[in-house]
Image 1: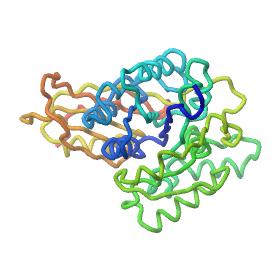
Image 2: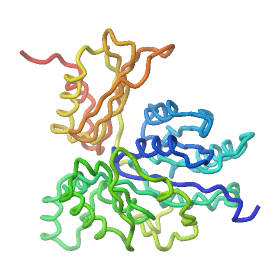
Image 3: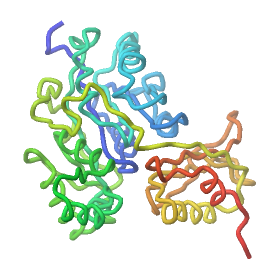
Image 4: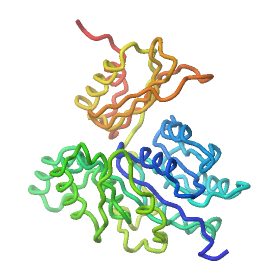
Length: 348
């Protein structure tokens, strides 16, 4: 099998809540004549993004071509999960013509690119391109670093200290590995926010990168698919904070799953989630909620204090189970405090 017959794979990376699932859903709805497959990697054990995407399945990307890896970071589970899943896709009676990989918001893309050199798959697939999504409003405000002032104060006090925070390292590694950067939620950022975000990206990127503003994932697929980057052969030009390490850890982050009873007021839940971000520095909340008297499940997605919720599908035969995944840096995860905010009655 020659390089010309390799199936192209687009790796979609980006910080928590940057809009990766929204982009993949747009690509599923606008495949440009391609038969697609999607591999979704989530941080935690509850597959929310995969469920969202399976609702978009059609003849161009049937449900059996949408697969999930929910057992940890994709770049840390190559042998056990990633390779077998790719082999499963390639064994389909009708093979996909293009594969999309949506990494978790905490994944480092470079270790994943190295996996494409594994003997079992290196002659069959190639990295067509790495697309990094960055929330334009958040990047412009410097939110990828939890406390920018504190980092700058440390830098001034002692030049020998490693000033990088876990969040900034993830962000920088994703940008450094990218072929294209999409500045998402451009409508919320405005022109000034987009300009500020572009300056941040340019400062972090090891080489000039196309940087494109996007709203609600709407972009011409021709701009990001078919790049023929062969990124697995270009690792030297994609530097990482973890170069020279055999592996990396995600002990900096933690995830907990909170089971809730049915709720009566989605707005009240949104307010509680905003409190989590404000008071406990929770980065990301996502999940499905049963609302009393409603036959459809409520999809909840939160990035910091920005909370979105909508009824997305009937519960049908699925159990009406309310469950939220909560993600934060390890030191900020206090299960009792999180449960208290989400579950305790509101004081009069």
